[in-house]
Amino acid sequence: MKKRLFAGILLGILFVYLSLKGLDIQSVLEGFQRIRYTYVAIALFVLLAMQILRSYRWGVLLSPIEKVDQVSLFSVTSVGFMLIVAIPARIGEFARPYLITRKSKIKMSSALGSIVLERVFDFLAITMLFPIVMFLAPLPPWLAKSGVLLLLAVIIIFGLLILLVVKRDASMGFIQTILKRLPDKLSLRLGGVVSHFIDGFKAIESPRLFIYIVFLSLLIWLADVISIYVMFFALGLDLSLVAALTVMIILIFGLTIPTAPGFVGNWHYFTMIGLVLFGISRADAMTFAIVHHAICIIFTAILGLIFLPSNTLTLSDLKGIPSL
Image (cartoon, rainbow, N blue to C red; front, side, top):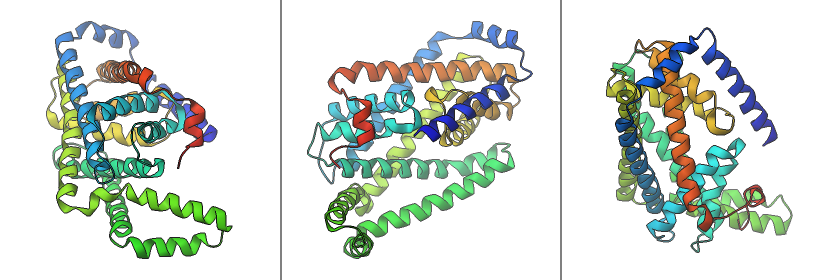
């Protein structure tokens, strides 16, 4: 955790420096005066819809294990995403699975498995949208290559997950063979943890459910594209939906590497990269990056704080990953 935090802070400082280097700060400040708050309100509504879709999809992923009510799912999702932003080294990723175990009979390891599956579906949806950007946007070579590598990685990971679920007995037999090298008590415990973890992938057993989750994942990320597109109007940028999609994908790549708390630096630099591709000046791109980042982070924080009283936890809870 400390190493990842240190790396994230260093990279954040580097990206802040690269973002500000040679920038006309006065032009950036003047850009704030152009904000149209009606469009900001619309963007916030879209972000809320995106959060509702996220919590609903998580419920679908968990449904083969246990059906959880949407109020619980939404409250836990809101707190979880707030902690992802607030706590370094992405320790906040453990918040949702831990909190949902307190509102259901789902095991921590199963809930964690569902989060892993959710992330894989996210990347699948992004790779499905990526060809649009490749054909219609002036992408830098590094991004085009990264997209191809991401697609290959998603295919391989999905293949492994499907193998674990469909050939569960054989997979568990292979895993148990490895675990037998450990002390009996530890081997038995880890075997149970792995079994419950695989339970978190049950949603991909059903082709119908698989397709439905892909559809929901596409809706979630298209909502994100729309929120960015609406923010273009908020700051007077004459750009297309393809530009919004391009900015989103580049930003996602920028956030996959270690980040400082709040994604400071990474968010601004990679947003600027995306906007400059479409002829936007660095000053206007930075204005957009600052406003877009502030709105998303503040929205996430407020939504999380609203539900935090009913979903309290400590950092030691997350570090310990209890109840596996």
